[in-house]
Length: 270
Length: 134
Image (cartoon, rainbow over all chains, first blue to last red; front, side, top):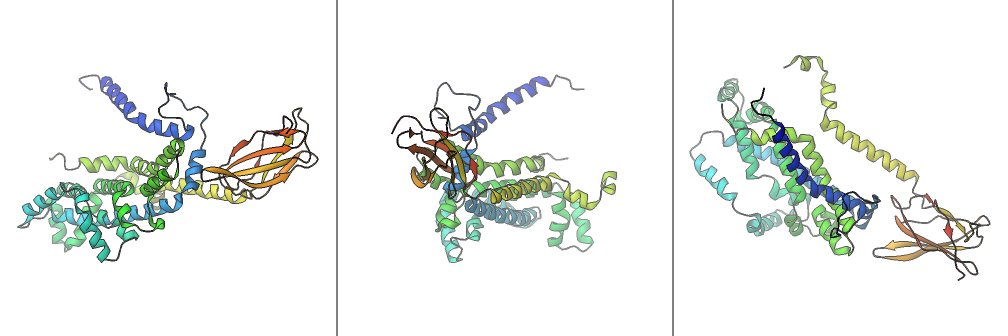
């Protein structure tokens, strides 16, 4: 039994959810009607909805190619994120002399915006011969500090005795990560997958700089290209936005339980 | 390990979960859609031309325009038979317009036709109606 009735909280949450969903609904509605978004009074329900703006987007630009590029780059970034961040996160749960310095370095690096490091990132990518390639597109997103700390928080929640037992049984540090820690960190993995995917999927600036050929462009660049092509873009533009957003929303909905668990793991002790 | 884990076969645990079922459903839908597209993309646009009284018009010229980026350009022409029917077989667009004309009878409005994919085979539901002598 709850001491206080919970319906006011639910009512408030429903109200907040409704307000937050309105922009998504509006984008969806405009994508099937092409209505002028500045029309007054606005129509709440779509009038004569049709899917043809989606068809237009599919054919106006090489959407399938851009989609494939985004999928490949995001997949590379996600896999690399999980592997590298897990290794870094595990190392930060160990005790070593420079650990406070490394933690401070990581935290301070979070304050440096990507725009400030884009020139060295470009030069390094160029030296590696990865410009205009999938690996070059994914490289700066192969590890993110936020996700390292997500893994660290998750690994910190694992009892030290379990790791000691594994070590006594003869497991190397490498195998402790993959055999002991990772199966216990599904929430952190889901968080890494979702955040890595969304950041890579939505990234605009880095693909803009590192790609040279139209065949290597990703969806955000396609959106910019699409805007430069079309004058009357209302319906098709919103359809494009839905097509770009849909995979990320689907992934989040699929893994939201693990995502929330990953974000909150390590938030409380005991 | 719960009792449920002991009873459920491994293959079922791997396959019957949302991370497999949702992508699999999407993949099946994509395959079915592509099968449908591949069997209905011959570029056939068919329809009828009638006069203001609804009678078929033979020998009318039907013009097909396709969207060329921002403007519509003429793609092809066809002529109606004795029943007023026309068939265009080389449409390769998804956004077309049709109009019919016959000297002495009149011309129709330019009718926009939106298709779900390029070169979709389509039979116009409403006939092109000629009105006003040209």
